[in-house]
Length: 58
Image (cartoon, rainbow, N blue to C red; front, side, top):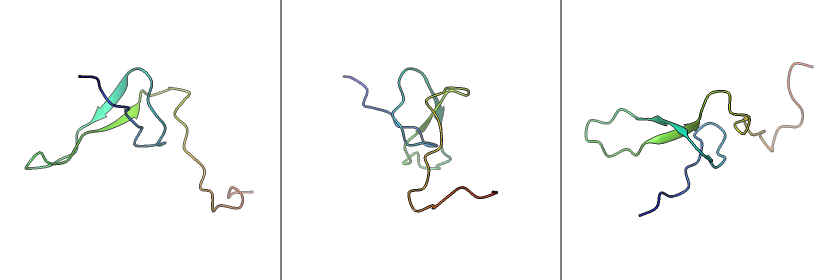
């Protein structure tokens, strides 16, 4: 059985290679694990909100 595609919980992009597993607290164990890119992975960048006109702080 092959693993499905895992998506990063932070940037919503597919994860290629190794990932950090985030185990959520669930007393019954019903919540699935989440995944994130490894720290420092250049593929993991937050996606811009399409409704945002321009970045703040200018």
